[in-house]
Length: 477
Figure 1 (cartoon, rainbow, N blue to C red):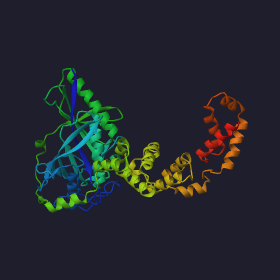
Figure 2 (figure 1 turned 180 degrees about the vertical axis):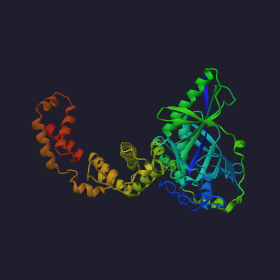
Figure 3 (figure 1 turned 180 degrees about the horizontal axis):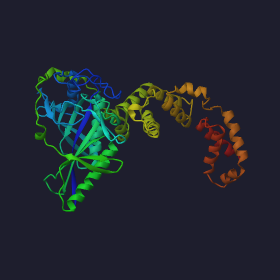
Figure 4 (figure 1 turned 120 degrees about the vertical axis):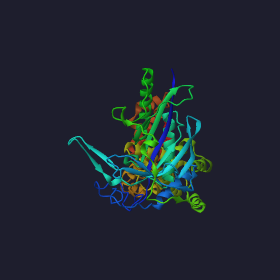
């Protein structure tokens, strides 16, 4: 029997506000345990929350950018459950009237376009962090993260493959970074995804029993978790057993998931309206102001780059997928006014160095204006491309100024014909066998001789001049 996968996502996004959702404690990542807490976010009795207006603003921005309807009248609810990292024994969230509903994000996988529906986006507070200490056989709690504002973006079950999930998350992450509502640093937990997954026989219209895999915080881990859980559920069904609705934890090191607890439904949380917070009324003027303040979003930027600069769609997909790569592209273009060359350098050297140094686009620190300057130095014949790549490596790691680095290390290109001629004659004299082969019609020898010339010139010569002088001397033989 062939099976198909049906998935929906719940994406939790930590917002880039300075303070928490209901108090004035800092949201800064890190800090000593339990130092970013107060009476409100630690759940002391008798305290009253005050809603951070910027959280609402960021929620509206996200809703508009993801084609959602904005709920004009919305409110908070209490989601009741006891867990050690939730000091109040309830979470303030939105069930009945979430701030955003009925949106969509369009994706493309293997040339096939698909619209992923967004059921809702709601505001809520984050919980603390449990730290399990195997040495002392105990669990410690850090409440610094309690009360950090979250958006939970809930999709419909529209995904059928891991590739679609990654395409959606990549695009969602780009949108959130473009509109400045979150840094989306998955390694810090700013973007976390829960995957609701079920399988069913191909052709069936009835959904299978779903499981939820919690808080997977890297795209690669998400892809592996999907494949692992899909295989597990199919194996359970083929053995004549039933899939249990439950929450599971994915262990990326072991490549397997394990059960955490039975999967709760809404009624298990005993939701009721939050009595300490007034409802929120969002005016048309507020929504219009947010719409007018949004920057150019990834899809629009992609279309403009292709039309305005004639760049390949593949290159543009990569560049516009990251707000930080876009900043590098646009700043370098402003200096050298050569979009195609900047694109080539980003797709080549920038991404190569990022990969080799395990640097995320958001953590790249070199001044992008220097990339534009380096491109102009290559175009002006100051350095050749190979030397420029060496200079760029220093730019990437140490943020050096290219022209200063070239001057300090005597890397300027040799454009003096007389110097090149002297080296070419020396190479010809020292390689008589190669000259004999060339006379016999072996044109490949020219590349070898060219390489020897560049070696003696320490890679600093103008390749066009070396080629010209070498061919002229060979013709004289």
